[in-house]
Amino acid sequence: MRAEGTAAAAAAYKAAGVRLYICMMEDWWPKTDKEAWAMKVRGFEMVEAMRVHELRHMELGEWKNALRLVHTVREPDVWLFQAALSVQRSIWEAGYEFAFIGGVALQRWGEVRFTTDVDVTLWCPLGEESNVTSDLESAFGRREPGASFMARIARTFAGRTHTGHNLDVALASTPYARGLLNRAVDVDFGVEEPLHVCSAEDLTITKTCAGRGQDWVDLKRIIQRSGRAMDWDLVWEELAPLLAMIEDPERMDRLRELVAQEKDPPPGNPYGL
Image 1 (cartoon, rainbow, N blue to C red):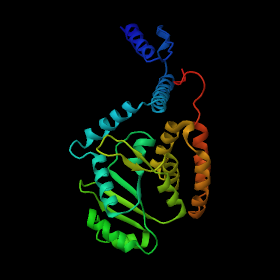
Image 2: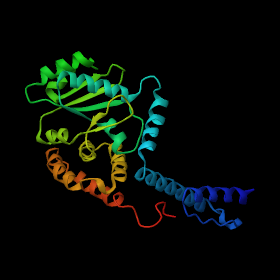
Image 3: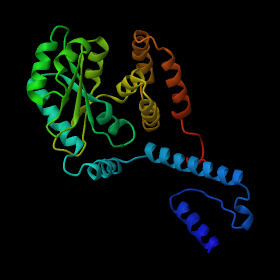
């Protein structure tokens, strides 16, 4: 039975286009805890390699199917992208320039994963915070009583969509933000209208500046998915002065290390077998 099961597993791997050589002898099985753990780690590495390969070669239809599998199962009545579309329509109706960043953009440029937040960069010249905040409150409502004060002192509006999703709006006025909005693209997420999201380069830049634990996980997937299509010259050029302003230039080195590890897949079998 053991040999039959192993043969079936090998056949399944070969059907998926993976070259796999498995010894059918009894001595193939681990004899010590150390050997068992080494096999377990190898299994993790193989699964990760397959995940990266699938991410790098994902077709449009596969991506849209993943969106629905991840998001409609968790929120069958209120789909995240319908909420985002409602936000987009309200912002454009108010006459503002904007782009989705954060979790919504990640679905396009990184790995499809569950998220409940809608993050937006919205153009707001200095001194216009009160007017913009008033319009946002009228359109969405605020999450906290001090939302207007927060917008004035931190240029961030914390609101809530009509569907109950958290809405974080960064009020932007810098030259970099101007470039981010100019580079934004329309992406078909399977709702009635394309959503206006930041570019892969700008998602990489903003997540590096944020620098939280999950951001580095996301950055790894963004790099894996973008491959050589990413304009890294633009990323380095825009990122350097931003990191200098937040006084954390070490993040540049950390990102460069990730790029060196993930940008170019190794030659030969993509699963490393």
